[in-house]
Length: 125
Image (cartoon, rainbow, N blue to C red; front, top):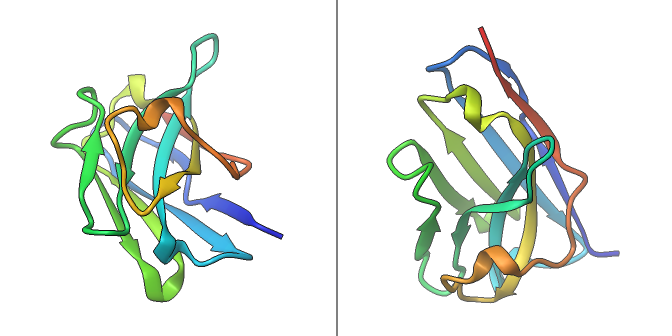
């Protein structure tokens, strides 16, 4: 069964950091581009970042550029989202999903298959 499982969320103060993990089971992440998404209460889901498997190319939402870094460890079948300088507006449930074969495209935010259950990130003092 194809499955993605997110972990690493939690409560952090503004300016703090968290690293989210997206672990795949039932399929090999090497073949897929993976995206991170988030959804805050009362808001639509938005694409946060995406990483290709073909060449490691990445996309970031403007709101997280320079603060978040996406990476992947194919040996561990896992994709990560390092989040630094967190702000209260980053509070949301974060999800990962398959967004295509091998390569991310700029419209990754409108794609998504095999969603995980999400992990809550709360930024508050």
